[in-house]
Image 1 (spheres, rainbow, N blue to C red):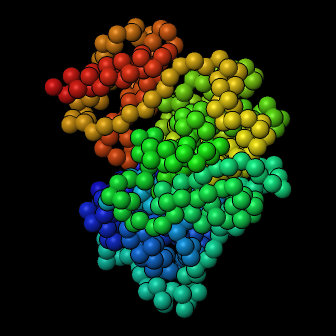
Image 2 (tube, helix red, strand yellow):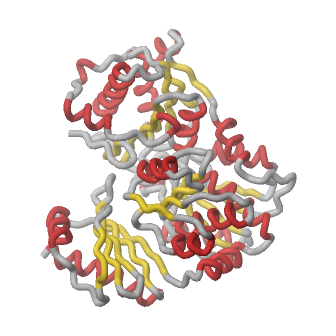
Image 3 (cartoon, rainbow, N blue to C red):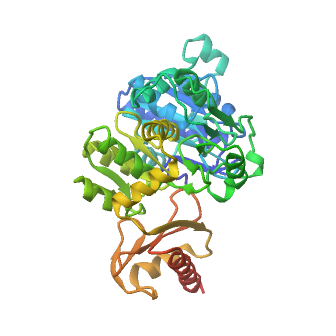
Length: 465
């Protein structure tokens, strides 16, 4: 049984992620288009992973075989571009071939619906209730689809970048010296277009060559994987260094001193800037694992914070329902009037605007933000594989783990969150896309952070014995 997770469908290439399974999913999507009398146009994009372009063409063959026109991008593109293109062309569905930040031997599909939102559970429901066999997948050749006008190769980078630029205050000259690491991923064409349109002469773009196997690793912008990049940025005295993952939705930042920042601090800074300097107003949407820095800041700014389950489809729904300014999780965020998915490039553009506006080192900007929020805590997210997932779930559902701090509240909105009497917390949950358990910890000091993370890991290890 194929499972559509929080970000579409992913699997190991040649195991779960096969031509047969992918074409079945697309046939299922075509059946939904027929039943719902949806618009018979779909944007198809792909990243730099092994065989992504080939899978994208196979997808187009199924769409064309069902008389659905496929607009396939003429180069690899970031996932948020496909989301925006779905919204821009007013289509009901869009498809991106990517496994995002997963290891090189994975690939996957991200599926979008109206306004570029991540697709809901309709697809999985039909896949499981009406299994599709390879014999009833309608396919015509890629060449025939092009001849019939049902497959068209297009570039949609400019309207995507135009919308990002519309969200920032344009200046004739940007002085900030910055470096952008695309991590051999599909953000390259979009970043180059942004550089051209904003005349960013002091922007250097690195790791631009395609590596379909990502050096036998995963293109994830974690601090530990970016240490060589950090060293290069420090040696060349950049004002800040930015990185996106393989498909351009996740991001990471180093300041001029080499300090690493995750999505908690970055999105909180964007929110502060939008309200304090741009005069905007609206709630902040965060997931269940997001730092309390935003709660402290929003309270001082007289704004509201809305908490959701893990998964950007939940954040997007809440952003729309609450007319919010930003929806975010630790790995990235989305901005009102852009797309309803994470987008590293729009965050980069806004961060560039902020540094230009304040004319201060990024480290000082973040220090000022923390003082404004009254935030002194430390935050970490850690992932690892486990042997007995169900045993852990059963234990955490029915029993109370013994932490060194007193638990005053146990939440189960998504996974299990244990809040302590000093305001700190631990969140334990399983990934929706990978066989991983995620432990997120927020504590009052680095020492407490390290101790509590090890404590949580030991509790999980003891449960499995």
